[in-house]
Image (cartoon, rainbow, N blue to C red; front, top):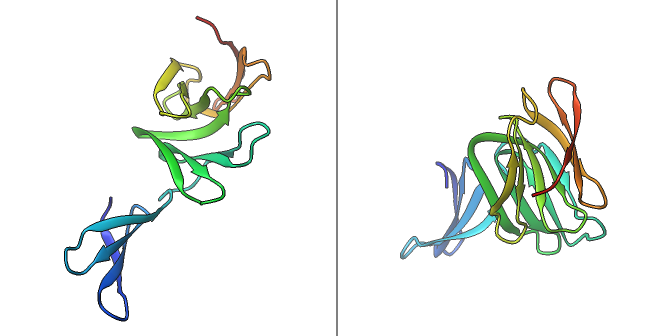
Length: 159
């Protein structure tokens, strides 16, 4: 992922680390140059961080193009939810942990399943100039969102 920006050879010249402009680090064997992903992170600013209610072993971050779910103990990325060409401004775990709510610069609220990243539902035209903040009520029946235009809206979740 991304253009190579740095390479560092080990002292015995059997392996090297390779860094890219998309904030990924690979470990490679010099014999076959088969890359093994060692570390990753967002390559643009992080817009929001969210923890599930009462659970500190994972958290989500959002940035340009994606939402990422991380394990706090291993510091490893567990899930990446990508929406190419859009910026995610805010992220929130529903109180029951069954969805990840998110607000995007295209004005949509999107909800994803936390295990697979599959789109659960979307609210189109939630805010004209982008959704900049989001949270859900404790009973998981409503979403409160804020937008670039300065408005706050409440959405009822239903079929």
